[in-house]
Each structure stands twice: as C-alpha cells, then as structure tokens.
Image 1: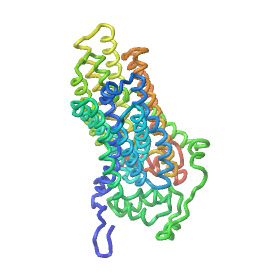
Image 2: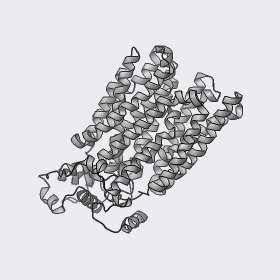
Image 3: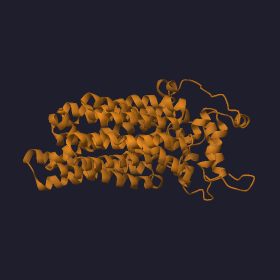
Length: 505
C-alpha cells in the first residue's frame, strides 16, 4: 500500500508471484500449536512402555490411554468452530495453547493412572481446538497461489512434533523409570506457555473480521498479507461478496462497522438442508478425513515399537531407534509435500500417495504374516521395516498434509468453521477407533491381518478420491463452491472461468 509520503506497507512485494513473508510468518506461528499436538501423539508411542511398567497397567488400559486423547479432541473440535466464530481465530489458538499447558502439567505430575487420564483428556480438548483452527487460520490469510504450502504447515509441524516425541522417548528413556516418562509428557508445557503469549502478536484473520463487520481492520490486514495493492483489493472484494456484503455498504461502513448478516442457521445450511454443491463439499471433507486414519497411520505412529517387535526387533533401544526412523521419514516427506502442493496440485499427489500406501501396506502385511507363521526371518524383518517406512513416506507426501489443506479450503466462508469442525470430528473418531482397537484386533486376526484390512481400505480410498475430489490448486477460496457444481457467491457464472484461472496460476 502506497502512503501519502511515498512509503510502501511492509506486507507488499513488487513481485506478485513471491510468497508474502508476513503471511508466511503468521502461518508458521499458528502452526506451532500443531508441534505440541504432534509431540503429545509421538511421545506416547515410547512412553507407554515405561508407563505400563511403572503403573502396572494392562493392554486395554494402554489402548484407552492412547485413544482417549482423540475422543476428547472430538469435544474440542466441535466446540472450536463456535468458539472461533465468537472470539476469533487468534484467541482460539491462544486458548488451545493454555488447554495444552494444563494437560501437560497434569500428565507430568501424574502420581497414578487416574490423574494421567485426566491430563490426557484435557490435552485432548486442546488437540481438537488446534486441529480445527490452525489450518483454517493459515488458509484464510494465504493467497490462492501459496495456500497449499501455508495450509500444509500445521501437518508438517505435527510431523516435527511426532519426531521430537520419539527423540524424547529415546533420550528420557535412559533416566529412572519414575522420572523418565513423566518428563517426556510434562515438558510440552513450556512451548505451550510461550505460544500462548506469542500468538497475541499476530493479526486476526481478515475473513473473520469481515464476518464481524470490522471492515477497516480487515482491509488493513489484507494489505499486509498481500503482495500488491491490486491483489489486496481483489481478495477483499471477494471476501465481501462471499460474506454477502455489498461493496457500497462496505465503503460506508469502514470506520463504523456493519451489522452482521446471520441469515439462516449455518448448521441447517450445512447439514440439514444443504445445497447440492455444499452436500458434495461435506461428503468430500468427511470422506478425506475418514480415510486419513482408516488406512492405519495412527497404528504405525502410536504402536510402531510393537510392530517392529512383532517383526523381530527385540532390544528396547533398537525399538526406540527404529521408531525415531518413522518420525524422520514422516518429517522429510511432509517437507517435500509442502513444496509440491502448489506446483503438482492436490489431486495428483493424493492419488499417487494412496496408490503407494496400498502397495506398502500389502507388503507389510505379507512380511508380518510370514514372521507370524515361520518365526524370525531376516528378509521378513528387513521387508517389515522398509514397508513401514515406505507407508509413512507415501502417506506423508499426500494424504497426510492434503487432508488438512483440502478440507480447510473447500467450504464457503460462512460455513467454514462448522465444516472444518465436522471434518476434525470425523478425523478424531477414526483416530480413536484405530488407536483404541489396534492391539485388540492384532490378537483377533494377527498383526499382518490388520494391515491387510488397512490395505483394502486404502484401495477404497483411492477410488473415493478419484471420483469425489476435484483439483483445488490456484482456485480462490471464494470460488471453491463452483468446483462442486454450485453457483458460488457471484451467482451462476460459467465454470470455465475457474478452470482458466486455475491453469493461469
């Protein structure tokens, strides 16, 4: 933005193709909450070995301890949509950090299983908030050309958090039994405290500000997160149209705000009587979140030491080191994915990723079945480890990050919070289902049998993605509805216009 004295606003860049540094910085800070969540997930993988020994608990209690995080996250995710509508995206991120802080302190203190469960439940509510709000905030401050990269940062941070959790297992596992696992769980309180204060330096989402009628603030922030004045004005106009605010009204309202247009119930419009396009969007979001965890990633992330033990690894140190390898693989391939999303597109990566997962899961199932039937085999052990890493790699380059990118960008503006909440709720239900049933299923149909089931589900996922998920690369958020056959906020214009924009971007 050029001011009267000839200076330019810090957010503007003379090259419109460059990523806006201010928007990138905001997305990175918002995504730190995902590191804490990832750490909470990853650290339990190794901590459960020591918790079981110290607190004298059984496999069923371990399953409940692992899965309760996701059931409580369900509560958090369903609450987060309404909360972020009411207090804003920024304060919702701060709230989730405070919830994580309380949960981490309780888990680090835990004198017994009951207190540990309470801490895990509180942390789970924070997980639900974090999973819903971080991708939404990142998507809403991003331009269409870099939205894939910025919106995938939360998933990257989850992977980094998981890796840090695995490393923490290996390092703190060398301490005394009573101190080691408590430090593993309690140390997450420190980044939570830092984030709770650091998040207040960030701006609010301009799209949320428009929905609140705070148009002057929205316009100012839009300039900061855009590269040119023209881009800022175009994105601002698109938001006004999506929010059903006339431009003339907006001009009059700057400085004084407008009355919010509540319209009909959001839940009615989204779930009870949705338009055909909104129904397809909801099916796409629910489907991609369902298949993300139904294909078994949580089983590998949470129980990889047990999987490697089944394959023939016996030393505790080697089990934890092999698990660190899972975290390293996940982080590396998510980093690669963040740079490919806006170049290759969501759809190609998603289909390639799912196809690779089918082969990796089948290979892992075969190798584990051979070990189960014939005992320890060197080639089967090697194939199990390679297949596990391959599955994590294929997942992380597509399904992992794209689930969050895709579901946070396809909903219309007024339905985005609640739509994202439904997606996160399905995600957490499936995550809890897998994490709380995996050990029981391995006893019923063997570990190899479980991975054959996951491979079959991955095949179904590939066909769902092929038929139900159109490409969203380069499409403005305000025009997503047209990809699913809707008129969108601008009315019933020819869908070819979107395709032209997509090609040009």
